[in-house]
Length: 394
Image (cartoon, rainbow, N blue to C red; front, side):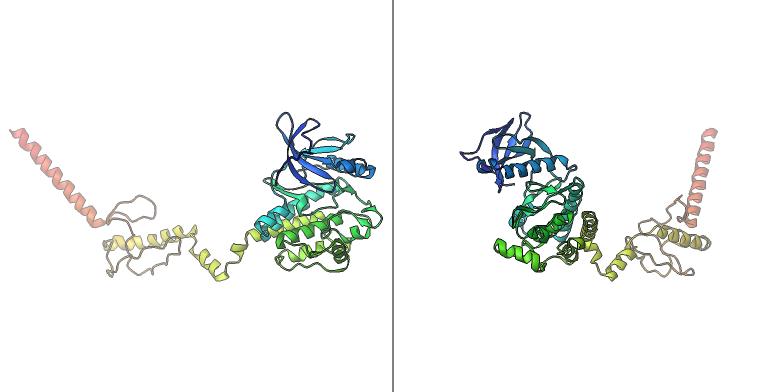
């Protein structure tokens, strides 16, 4: 998150917190980076002086604090402290490091389909906790989503309202950000959790295309498009387009629930993560499977050698005997072709002729070499015996 130096008019201390930097400014006030005496960093929002005297804005600020206190889970920044009766009301939440989704896309470009689905699944799961607390955010947009190392976080509940409340602060004036508002917000009817689903769909479309699904323009033009025109999802990955289109349905009843949305996005994220493997041609996958070692290969090799063993013992053949052709090296991890039963076996690669082995299924000692060793043993024994006898006679 971009930080700016404090200005001359900015306070240096608010409550028990020392302020260090500006994090941003909005319609309600300024957000600062602060810290307490223990060094814990917080994001501290202070209402603008001209709005602090407006009772309606004080009420809205109080709703934000109330909403932050009621929501449980890791989807939002934890409330640390607040003072609603101060000359300039303020409240502090746990500081969330990381850029906003808006800044991430603006600086680094659009997100891949797997990233969009992963971020969307976490946000939808977070909205489940928000709605279970009886709160509707009403202003979900890319700049109100922080991408922290521990996952995305939803911030700025400044216009959050209890489920079923009206969306108008003044007659005919909608609260929220054009391009991410739901049609019911523009019409001024009661908000529901489906209102946040619409905003989340528009936000994910922005992450995939770097633009609102309703384009750009003045507030009146954008609000008209939201109510009367279909969203433009050109550039949205095919795996996400149908789901985002459902989120942007004009009728709230036709939108998926936050729980359904979370589950569906998790499935898409998992499938997109395996996209390279699934995109491999079938012939290539079959060839890889054929080259993969199997546990049946040693069994086939052992069975073949058991059948060849009596024939080798009877003929007393040399290890390299037979047709005289050079042995072919085996393929690593491949399927070794079986030799015909009546063909003369070839020597195993890397094994010396006549080498004795004790493992089951291995080649026994060469009979000819064994006879040679026995003869040498008898000759040596005879020479030693004759030598002993001659020594005794002396």
